[in-house]
Image 1 (cartoon, rainbow, N blue to C red):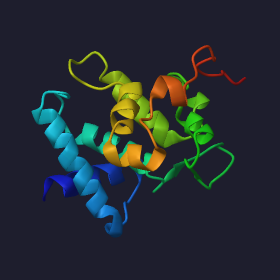
Image 2 (cartoon, rainbow, N blue to C red):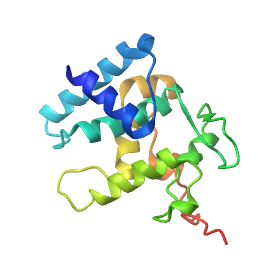
Image 3 (cartoon, rainbow, N blue to C red):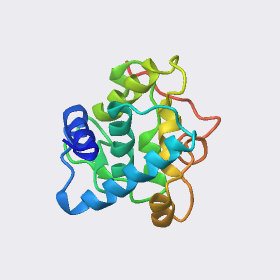
Image 4 (cartoon, one colour):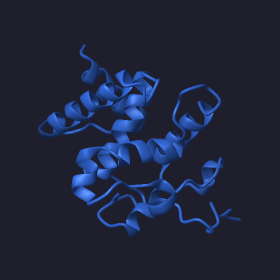
Length: 161
């Protein structure tokens, strides 16, 4: 099994997301750019799981998949505007606060790795993928978590009673 196939299989197993074959070239090119970054020393991690997380975020930014805007809906919302990027905002460690379980899975996985050296946190995964040239070409500029997803001064998450 090749590296991309292994990562795609991991994306499917973690996020229940099967990426369409016609988009495989875009994902392969993303993986190649990620490998170059690793060789350049910009990201020391090389786990298949972390690559799967990045590929999932890449698919969100490219509008190939969406997120649940509300747990009461079954249809996913495609992130096709700057306002909709706010749906990616971290909502704390309690899973009940999250509308989309896949984002919660990403949050938990990256939070648990936070203490490990050279691993990316939840916000840094979004920042790193948001600086990819294909994402920049689609959105017109880098996507920065603190600026575009989580507005400073806002409450990070709301506890529901």
